[in-house]
Image 1 (cartoon, rainbow, N blue to C red):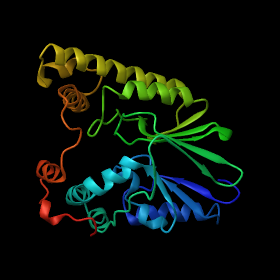
Image 2 (cartoon, one colour):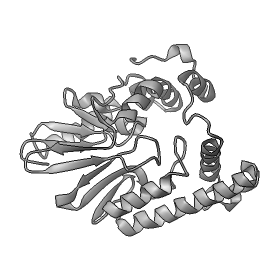
Image 3 (tube, one colour):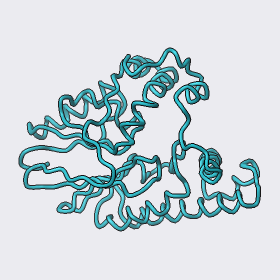
Image 4 (cartoon, rainbow, N blue to C red):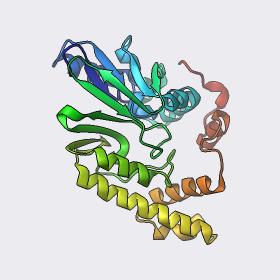
Length: 264
């Protein structure tokens, strides 16, 4: 929070959940808010609508991901969820960031400047961290996970270790992960070492021609996460496109592509 605005980092997965955050912020301050999306996954930005007409910051590929994949992911997760969450997800109006950048951006809150940094590919190709240097706080999004292994569904496992090194270099105080409890630089470095080992195993396994079914036990991750990491690493090593087109994604997730659109 600055003298003229407050910052909201991520907005959860539905309009009601976004409003819960908005109401919590209003119990602390009446200052106008500025929103940052750390990346383009539904559980971090489907609540954006609750903060309009506030400016919403995010990486340029975060906005692209929401426009490309958001409708399919909305239909998929609405179909998997139980009521009333299923209805809330189906009703989401997808609002991509309207203040986009590629590498770095600075947001002036009045007497406090926060720095938005894209440090490299990791959990997605559009992760950003929110650096508040005068408070020694770093919001890391899903580049850092506490209480749960890193998730690789849209990840770049071969790039993630170097990105984590850059996160660790900024972690001079508290680090707020995308999920779980607040951590510190030591935790970031430890998780970075796990990711580096996973990338090493993936490179060696691919070079040896080992299929995922054979290689996953060597990964320093639980089976489901190890298989996902290997799938994504092999995709990188083959030079495949990093993301499926929406119609292919819809078919893979079992969502009728014709039923998806950018608005509910």
